Amino acid sequence: MDFELSQEQKAFFKEVKDFAEKEIAPFTEEYDRNSEFFWDGWKKMGDMGLLGLPFPEEYGGSDAGALDTAIAMDAFAAGGGDAGVSLSWGAHTIIGGVPIWEMGTEEQKMQYLPPMSTGEKISSFGLTEPDAGSDAASIKTTAVRDGDDYIINGSKMFITNGPICDLCIVFAVTDKEKGAAGISTFIVDRDTPGFEVSRELDKMGNRTSPTAELAFTDCRVPASAMLGGEGEGFYGIGKATLEWERAIMVAPAVGGMECNINRCIEYAKERTQFGRPIGKFQAVAFKIAEMKCLLDASRLLVYRVAWMKDQGIPAMMEACVCKLSVTENCVKVAGEAVQIFGGYGYIREYPVERTLRDAKLGTIGAGTSEIQKLVISRLLMGKF
Ligand SMILES: Cc1cc2nc3c(=O)[nH]c(=O)nc-3n(C[C@H](O)[C@H](O)[C@H](O)COP(=O)(O)OP(=O)(O)OC[C@H]3O[C@@H](n4cnc5c(N)ncnc54)[C@H](O)[C@@H]3O)c2cc1C
Image 1 (cartoon, rainbow, N blue to C red):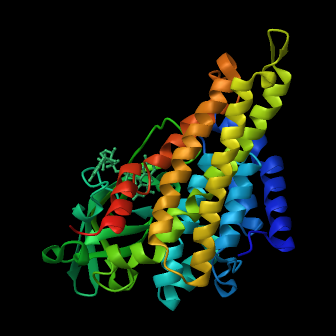
Image 2 (image 1 turned 90 degrees about the horizontal axis):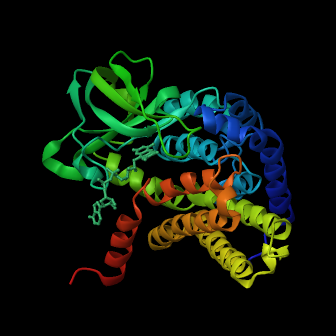
């Protein structure tokens, strides 16, 4: 067992971290305040090859593998890269991209992955609906066959990149008798008549990542827009993206913890109360030690799943353990960072309050913490 990253991986971590420090972090506060998508940063990420990291080179990607993708997402956040940008990146490359790469036809891969790798086209993932969140198999959006086409009707809720996307992977029922096995997915271009951003949602955190409710009204797509076979939407995409979504996509939470700990160390050495730096008080110093333990455990959990994915070892249990632990750890670390900063931690001119707002989404999106516990306990105990 080797826990050491290669020299190339360490250099890659440093390269991405330096990029985030220089090109993203200085603008984060302003974009968060304005709730604005950071187009300049996005283009630079595309130029650097970050947006198509896991895709094969023949589709414009960087052929990076799951571990290297996790390293990049971790490093980006460790360099102060904004969580909203990371969320949009994950929604685009991971849940909005990996299904096309893993399940798409040659034509679909050639059409979408090269412009997605440069950032020229932005992807999104449309599963959740106003009345179907944790119980995602109960979606109501339908896709009805009509000659060589399908006609999609329904709405999608909380869709990351919804307001700015060029395409959306839309989950729709094609055979309602079959339950989850009757759900199919379609790649729907934004300019398809009947595809509408019905409203943009104002959020507590991750404010630089735009989120929308989408409406599909008699939205006609060719049968060739189907991703995977009929009925393969729910289980097929779930299988293809499980480890990606529940481990690699949470890698920014790890780097975010590292960044917060560094802020706390600096602050605890500088801030003086009762005639000494607050870091000299054991109550503060021990918080930092505990935060470091949460960080190291989280990084190992993410890298373990990424490594397993690269080895072709199924990791459903490990991915759920990772998603649950890392996102909850990130909230704890952000909360303690606010505490260490005291009153200043609650004020917007210091970045730690933003990290707490941002971190909370991790325990909700992509399967809530309760749902991860449900899956883990079922895997452990089976049916009894
Ligand atoms: C900012 C943001 C971005 C998102 N991006 C996307 C996206 O790009 N694409 C997409 O498809 N979705 C996206 N989502 C949706 C996200 O995945 C859902 O919000 C999440 O799955 C939870 O669904 P829900 O919000 O409907 O909550 P609900 O399912 O209504 O859950 C409410 C509460 O009940 C609990 N609960 C529900 N069922 C159970 C159970 N069986 N046992 C125990 N507790 C239970 C939940 O844990 C939660 O605490 C996003 C959400 C947000 C907030």
